Image 1 (cartoon, rainbow, N blue to C red):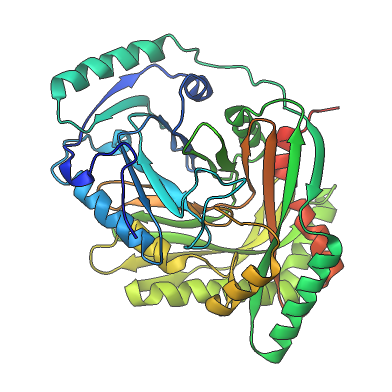
Image 2: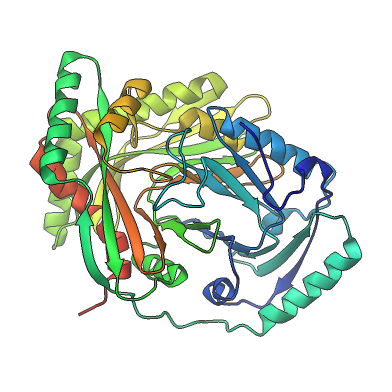
Length: 443
């Protein structure tokens, strides 16, 4: 395990200085289009939207203690820093792979087991204003002020709105797991559940897509914003080769001071074509013994993992309605003891049973034995944290890794005792639709 900065500067030797200023509102897509990697984009349903480009500090780690290693290195980097407070404060953006021993391989070149970047340039849009923040690591405040002014001038020349380009179009797509292999994996998992060795496991499939034209991920995210305004949106692009992006409905955790919020989200049905059909499908979620069992496993596991850290409150279950699907949803909050850091919560919660299973160690073995592709960062934590340890992470589902004319989409389903392989095969296909719709050309 190690923490490193790719540019060759030890975080212990940095003197972080940041300055911010209000700028006219600008197209974030136009900003990203004019900047090379690393690039990040984060948008939360509550209105915070951030884009960043360039690298002030990059932290990379692996192994079972990767989140602790990143936390320690970030605290060292922030020590003695002079930075603004409020929405414009500098943040580290990034995430991690699902498995802590992940090794970058196609299509995950450039994505280590964990990496976070503090952007050189950051734009934050809130309900009140758009603010630019520039960060340097050499402590040179005169150079910083000059750079801030130069970047502000560049941004002032960008359009306030940028037309969304055409979808790249899909030439071909194929699931990397056959339906027969999928069925065999589910049947094996159900046998283990019936034997008592396993309570639940989430099995996933990948969809390899060849595109007609090169993908512009920022345009795809804009189309996703229009279709899924109540979801998170993210882009983590460590290199120019490929970016990981998605529109997850599920918050892993939000930490503000000592107050944490998270969600238990499990069970999926389609949306109805009429209000009556939609309501009937929602009722089927609430009445399904299988889906209620799956949801209860997720909520109970989250509560158990947070309980040692403070007082946990589990809210009443409801139905979360999205554009194409709806889920069982249980909000969970916690008032934490001590001096919490959001990465501690990420470490405690990942993987939740909504994307892994129970018991966690057995579920991980079953996932490794069954899945025929590399999960990479799929279903893993993606988000941000600041100098105070506050931050927010989503679960990297409804997602894809894409670059050039290729994209790989991911989707998974929770498997319990009465799971039917054919039903699960059909349901998992619904979860490809958000990303596919952002890539396919309209008729």
